[in-house]
Every structure is written in C-alpha cells, then in structure tokens.
Length: 246
Length: 246
DNA sequence: TTCGGAATTGACGTCTTGTCAAACATTGAC
DNA sequence: GTCAATGTTTGACAAGACGTCAATTCCGAA
Image 1 (cartoon, each protein chain N blue to C red):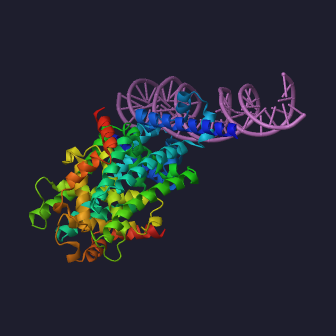
Image 2: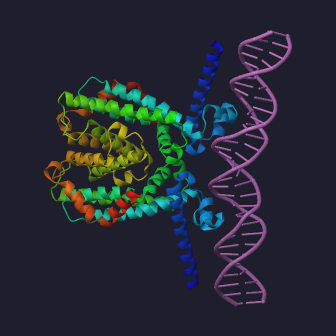
Image 3: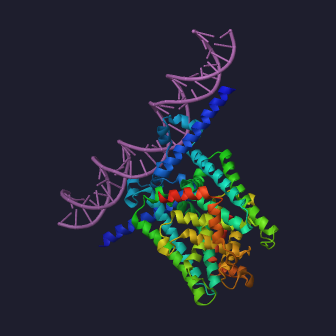
C-alpha cells in the first residue's frame, strides 16, 4: 500500500513537472517551440515516458488549460464573495478575469489552440468534461451574482431574459476585448491606446443598459475597483504589476 | 508584352485555384487536414510550384484570410449605406458580421490560427499590412456611423469617450460571442440555446447604455433587421439559409 | 533549329508525432 | 538470497509534414 502510494506520488510529481516545463517552453518559445521531444529533453526522460502520462500533445495542452482554469474559478469565487453591492461584486469578477490573463499570459495561446476543432477532437473525454465543468462553474458564479441582484431589487429582468443572458454578454465582451487586445496589432492606430479602460467603460454601459442599479453615473465604481484590487486581489495585482515591469 | 501578361494571368489563375483548394481542404478536413503536399496533389502540381506562389504555409492562410476580409469589408460598406436611422445602419453592420461567419465558416478557423504569434511571425509584411488595412477600414466604417449619429443628434458622447470606444465595444462583444458560439460546447447546457438571439439583445443593451436613440424599447428594431435581411442582404441571407439546411 | 533563361519537378534533409519490442527495475513468494 | 512475474523506461523506428535545391523541362526569340 505504502509503496503503491509512493509510486503514485512520483507519477503525480512528474506530471506536474511536465506541465511546468511545457508552460515554460510555451512562454519562452511560443506554441511552435513546444514539442514532446523538448519537454522530454529538458526533464531528461525519454519520449516514451511522456506518452505514459499524456496520450498526445493535445492532452498536455488541455491539462495546462485546466490547471489555469482551476485558478481562475478560484479567483472568481473570491471576487463573488466580496462584501458589497451586487454590481460591485460583478466588477470584482471582471477584475479577476483581467488579473488572470496578466498572471497566465500563456493561457491565452493555449485556449486559442485547444479550441481549434482539429486539436479539440484529439483530447480525451475526461479532460474535455473537466474543462466544460470549469466553464459551467464560472458561468454559475456570475449567474449567482445576477440572481442576487434581482432578488435584492437592484435590477429587474423582462420575461424571456434569463440571468445567463447578461453573463453571456459580459463574458463575450470581456473575452472578445482581451482576445483582440492580445492579438491585434493595429489597435492604437485606430485610436484605442488603452483597450482595458475602454473595456471597462463598455462593461459599465452594457450593465447600465440592463438597468442594474446603482447606474454607473450614480456611484463611484472607480473607487470600488481600486478597493477590490487592494483588498481581495492585493497579492494578485502586485504580482501582475511586477510582471508588467519585467 | 502580350505573352508576359498571359503568363501573369496564368500565375494569378493558379494562385486563385490554390486558395480555392486550400479552403476546401480546410472546410472538409479541418486545419489538420490542410497541407502543402495535399494542395499540390489535388491540383496536380509539384510542391515546389506551390512555394513559388507562397513562401510558406502561413502565407496561404493569411491570403485566405485577406480574401474573406475583402468580402466582409464590402458587406460592411453595403450595410452602412442602408437608408435609415443611424442605429438601423448599425444593426445592418451587425447582421453583416453574422452573415459573413455563416457564409465563410472556415474563416473563423483561419483567423484563430493566423493570430497565434508563432504563426503570425512567419507571414510577410505585405500581407500583414493588408490584413491590418482591412481591419482599420472596418473600424472606420462603423466609426463613421457613430459619428453620423452624434452629428444628427441621435446620441451624445461624454468628453473623453471617442466614437471608436463604441466600435470597440460592439466589435469585442460580437467577436467574442461568435467565437464562443463557434467553439464552446457547453452553451446550451448553460441555458443559452440561441446565442445569436442573446447577442442581439446584448448589442441592444450596450447601445442603449450609450443612449443611442431611438432606444431599443422605443422602436421596432426587429422589423428593421428583417427588412435589412430581405433587401440589402437578400442574396446573402438566402445563401446562408441554404447552407444551414445542408 | 538552337540557345538561354525561366518555370517545374521531386528527391532530400530535418523536424515532429506517436508506437513498440526489448531492456530494465521492482515486488512478493519461497 | 533467488527467481519469476509484473510493471516501467527506453530509444530506434515509421509516418508524415515543411521547405530547399540541383537537375530537368519548357518556351520564346533569334
């Protein structure tokens, strides 16, 4: 029993190291620079051993994605637990997404690649389901805030509009804005020097459009954001700032 | 002179055929199924000849992207020329994006791939600039509608907010929603059966949030959308419907 | 017909993924 | 301590992709 569990621990340990190296290669040399051979070479294991852990390269990527998504879900839960008005809690989740992309810049590439049908197809149902579960739980966290807002009278939704509609709106806008900001080259040429600030404005306007009180001109949400960054996510925002400097 | 131009025509013709085949392979076998060897095999040319036209595989992809983007820009311009209130013209451009992704489903994969840094790096400045130019012109078209709205009093923007901010909001939301809808598997599990309808609602709410008149509850924009689809984009919407059936 | 430059070819070098038989290590029974 | 059985690790190998380039073919002009 003891020896078995030691073996198991060794296997888990090595799996973690594989992902560590994979992430490092991804950060340093991009997607092109990530290969099973190179991971094996760095870790001084043979390629065969790699394939004992992950049946294909795509599985490594999806495992990497899931690792990061677990952290993101945790951050979302911290954000949703912020003690404040419902709309402030929503802002906290928005800040969580931004800090997440700053802290895990490689995750963006990973998600871009993993979502390609020809890559997705090769992954295992087990890990696919894990990823879906993370996605659903993130939606549920934000959806919960929306429901709280309705319950406490901060907002009314017309019949036919479910809380998930707002979640989808914020999700798509945030995802889209970060995607474009990360990959598009000509934004500042088009008069968009600070896409993050513009994203914040648009998020506010969208939520205003749903009549979620207090509306953006009735309340100092800038102060809310600063407070959240310095309390709930103080460690994360310091780490992100440090990374920005480097 | 005459013979030279005939040669040139032959070259252009072949280039078009290469892109045709590349698109077909992409649609039928996904990104994984697209290779230079296979294009050459289908066209019964040698691989070397392929590389006379495109210096690498990435160039083929970017050429494909630019081909589609030219069509999209054209569609945007048609949309913006719709004779109606400014907000109706905006809706026309939204419909144009949707029809575009329905008519060029492969373009989505292409853009996803081309935006990967390790792919983008290998492309030529010439084609990169072309892509950037298409992007900027699309922004300019929508930006023009926003400016018209301000000029005719349909909307006021606070100081510090440029028309491009709204463009970015709509762009990111639409891009994000379509991305998620195309690649995410668990949407209907999360209560989002019809992401396109939800996108429309969110676009309306965002524009409402900017106070662009007439607001969504003051006007029948559903009717506008139907009219646009049956007039400006009647050919495109019929083609998209036919493709949906298949 | 012949010549010279341009276009075309496909074998080749290199890299990557994923497999598998053989070598090696570990365990538990005696 | 020995040994067989079981599990693990290895690296050579097959398959397939990209991109190159020397050799060949083609073609128009003289």
